[in-house]
Length: 129
Image (cartoon, rainbow, N blue to C red; front, side, top):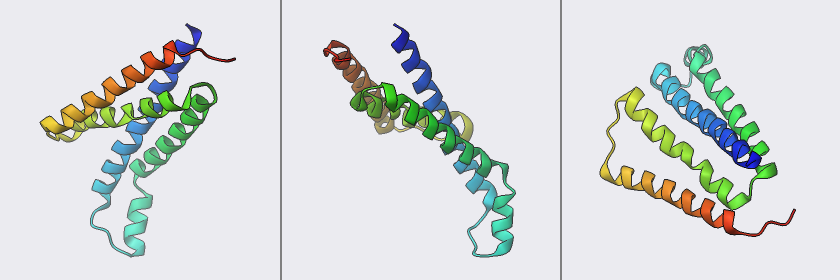
């Protein structure tokens, strides 16, 4: 049961950082304005706190992912990492007012159901220490 808590906390942290990264990139690009190859635009982008939140998100996701890969089986871990896309989809509705299509909802459900099936399958496999 100790492993289950480790996985639950680890994947929650990974999903948090992954979602933070995507939201911060969206907010950073919205604040950056139209792309221009100029020192003024680069300076404007470099002074945007959302850029640094995105970098923090990438670093947090990297450390979380590397830590999880030390302990979790690769197949289910890779599949579970896609829960971040479902979280980003949900957060985008709340923060950015984006509309979810039926196809997006079906896709999110497929991701969740696939992860559940992989987890059940992995739990039934004999493990060699």
